[in-house]
Image 1 (cartoon, rainbow, N blue to C red):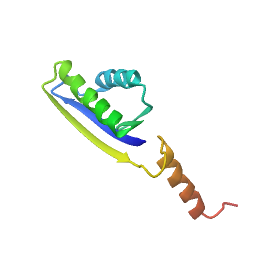
Image 2 (spheres, helix red, strand yellow):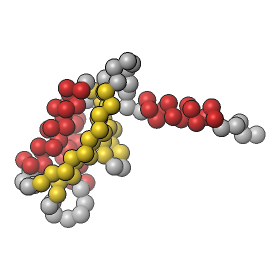
Image 3 (cartoon, rainbow, N blue to C red):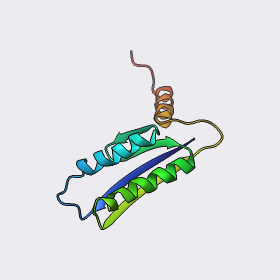
Length: 106
């Protein structure tokens, strides 16, 4: 499994808020059936590399279908094949390491 972090920004959309656009993209993610988690700066999606590239393309193209002439998309993919990873595993790993390094509080 792989993880995708993606941010899709429709440029030239009216107003400065993007919540309505993001809600539309969230609907597409729900339809994909892939696990995802929205965060303050983008969205994390879990799936095979092929699934992630396909969903990234759908998200990117969606804005054009809504009439925007320019879309800025930033994505990162972590495709780990030596073990299964899921959304939240990396954060949990760092939290475990952090607890090991901190002395016990009295």
